[in-house]
Image (cartoon, rainbow, N blue to C red):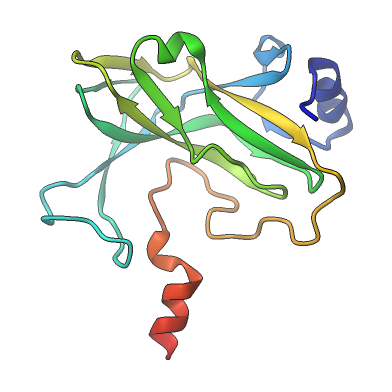
Length: 183
């Protein structure tokens, strides 16, 4: 069941969902709009021929109130808001339609687990033939909440819990790789 604006407000008022900062105009009929922060990461493409899932990826950090994303380019960004999701909800990150119609694809793997807290890192891809400028403080995506049939037994406690700022891939910390290293 997707939460409506009234239920989202109830969850916010009771503290079950926490989003900080939050303005009332960010609450939509069945979602909350999140805004872009001023912290970006770009894969440092001068360091290697390729990147892999077993090695830490090197990024260049860019702090700016505005950034231009070249055509067919990928950057990481983050929401300004710090979000806390209770153990009985899951959230989906969706791009805003107006942004998608510019040719900017927004993802975060699309999923925010029950028990997650932190700023949400976003993957931005310019699918257009022209550069796209994005500005911090602007609404960039929306968070849609869905009620679970019951609270989860094991809330999220993974490698991104509590993240602040734009956070690069930590795939090299996956537990299957750690057990291989220990063997």
